[in-house]
Length: 221
View (cartoon, rainbow, N blue to C red):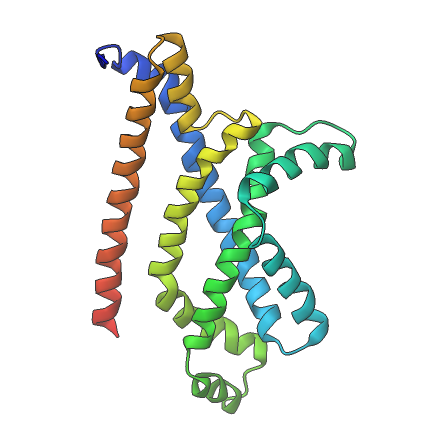
């Protein structure tokens, strides 16, 4: 088999790939921020000790963590328009789905981070007159975020890789950009190989940054 990568020029990259890369990055960042925010709330609910908070949070997390992401993507894309009575674009559907889905994983990371903070820190907050919410906001969560930052970033790298699954609903992501270029130039194998290389370079570079960050946090400790 003769490979020909000569057609991959800047015009092809700017015309097909950059649009998909921008959406993949946008989807990753929005889902990361929204997932961490929602995940933190879920983690606090599970650690509250109140059944009316623990049970729905545990059900949410365990349910989503037990279902393949591609199925959740299809459910949101096909079912939400039926519930709201109007169609929803693939991009918006992907953003909502990833935020809701990733919150379940970020929740477990945040729960572990909160539990890694010694109980004495919480008691010290109570001793100076802080409420539970103030103790969490000012004492526990800042330390938990620092402890879990490498793990949160690692999950974000996995999230970026998972964005390729939005092909199932036709969203124009990085992989879709390469696929369209391959169809236009009748070189699908070459474009899929290039897509794999781009994903590898991005994810490997981010992994190296996470490792450096982990070493810095270890020194601070």
